[in-house]
Image 1: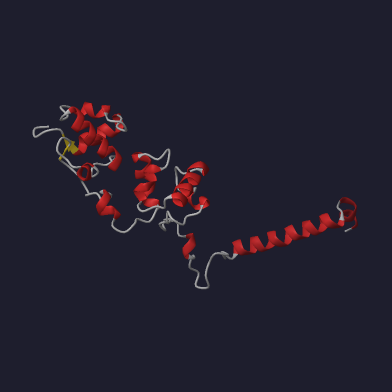
Image 2: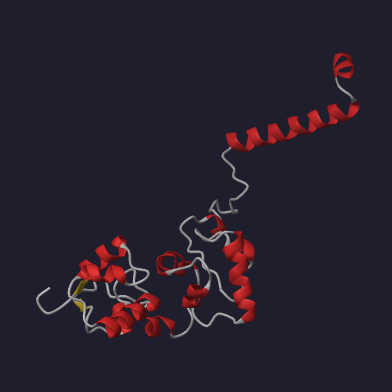
Length: 198
């Protein structure tokens, strides 16, 4: 003990004793396989369930909660809250009004938020298991949103382009529609047709 007194101050000795006590408790818990997160019956509490679906309410989520959604950083979380305070969310698709959130990003993040009553049927967010044979030249905006990767904004742009330039004669013409790139075009080709024989 005298050697310890010459090496450590009284305060340092107290800290060392504290560490030794907690290390001993930790080793004991490990040996007896006791988890501090187990209930009396030995079941893991619900909050540790990794498979539990986490969803937030767009009209009440905090910035910290929003930033747990992949693709939403501090700036985007700030923008979402600013939009909420100025206009309020009436649909998850209102997220498209946030700078930096387009159709592709919306598709990735929408399931992290609770849906609003009636929004799925109105916005075409409830998609059939395997949408096929959507005719690009005759489909309504709602029908176009059945195609994965096409949201209401892109659907409106397709219809505007069609109204201005006439019917599409080839899929590649869709690349002239703002928001459609090669990747989206490849998906469209899987689920759509241009005309009767396409």
